[in-house]
Image 1 (tube, helix red, strand yellow):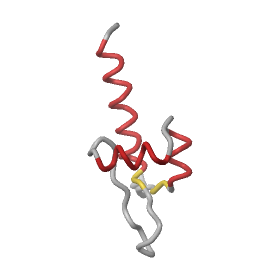
Image 2 (cartoon, helix red, strand yellow):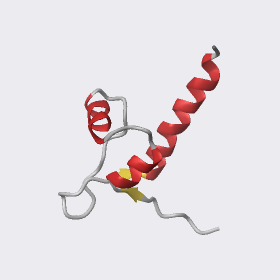
Image 3 (cartoon, helix red, strand yellow):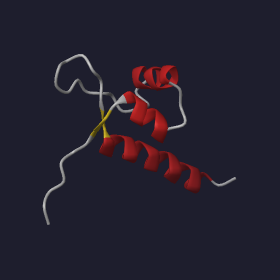
Length: 69
């Protein structure tokens, strides 16, 4: 089975996956509660690891399921 290439998501793709605003995402990054972006090729554009975003979402779902009511 071939290895998969890690995928990077631009901000608009992250916003589609998580129910947060741009400002909330950047506040959460500063607070250490959201994955930090990387500067892939040109050093200007930000992108997030798809695997890190997926893991962040999974953690939210797991904490919700384990938290009870």
